[in-house]
Length: 250
Image (cartoon, rainbow, N blue to C red):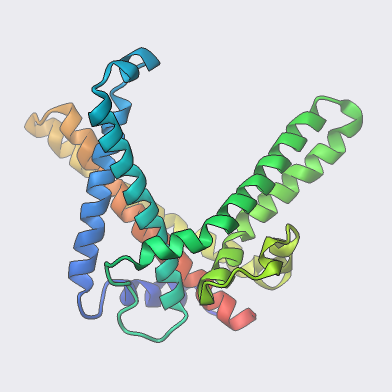
């Protein structure tokens, strides 16, 4: 399997097809709103400032942030599902289905979050004792392996949105190591330029704002919006590549 070809094919499928411009525009708008809310929260320098804010405003913004975050996450799960098909329109439609996708995935998200948290806690606990230091190192290595190959667990789930018993097996990510490790490493190296390209537009925007005298707060917002949108699209591209690897290997 050609990793470079996977990236170029994924790019073409994401940014082509009917309604591609409309869907990309809506994704950009969603990320713009989330970025604006993020900056809103960052203005609070301490808990006192946070608590002095209008409670109704704070509640409304927090609810909006949670709803958008859930929707964007669910949208990526729907994207993974559509990546299993040969449909020209790989980007999902904007409807209520991303909410449903997220709710279906929630038990899986919670369980694996607990697994990872438990491994981190155990590794930190063991590192304090020289006798159990080796065990701590083993746990850290296990954590890295699970974190890298965990997306395949979600990809398996997103294929049919079915919560199978084996998806909750903490050893499941290790199943994917042997057949996909080489491709994942190569794909990761090829994605370095992609991440760099995600950073450049925001930096250019900041420079232009500085030269033209636009307020620093506006420059920060523009940078965050561009970064959020481009990294989200890069994330979808990464998921597309993983789905194709999954389809071929499993």
